[in-house]
Length: 188
Ligand code: SF4
Ligand code: SF4
Image 1: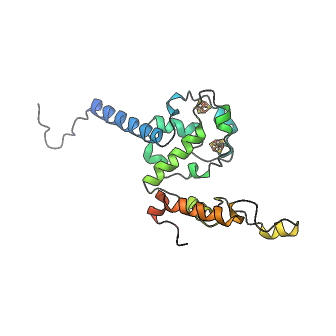
Image 2: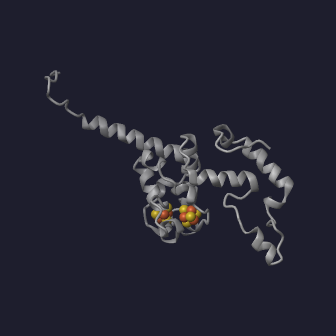
């Protein structure tokens, strides 16, 4: 083997880099598959899920179809900095229209789980998690006064008004990764 002379740039071993990138790509796909996105690899990028996704309509960067493509390309670091998966409203429209049974909704949530493992949770999500713990709703309704005005009970007929259900939910949340992270107070 010829030793590099001083000042001469080292020759890049492209096959080694390609091999490493392939390993990274396989790694991120395996991570999200383990977190619930089992059918990710069957995506054919038809775009049906993007056509019905509210996130795509309002301009979130990594909406379903694009997120799946990025994962298949092994782009983990780029995704960790983005809040898109936390903005998914779980409407499941994408799951209904996907011809390959990929369930892009599950991909979104699998990426959330991956982000939690990496401590890459955007502030946008922390408020939602706090509301989930306090009231049982990740997107908390602020319209209590409005509800009263139209003759409705102040709290909706959900976990928010069911003491036992809320207590059970808190117990569940305290036994998840969320409690380990210590991002929100979970004292009661
Ligand atoms: S609808 Fe299904 S196959 Fe088409 S891009 Fe979305 S996930 Fe992929
Ligand atoms: S479930 Fe999430 S990813 Fe799927 S269409 Fe609704 S907002 Fe988009």
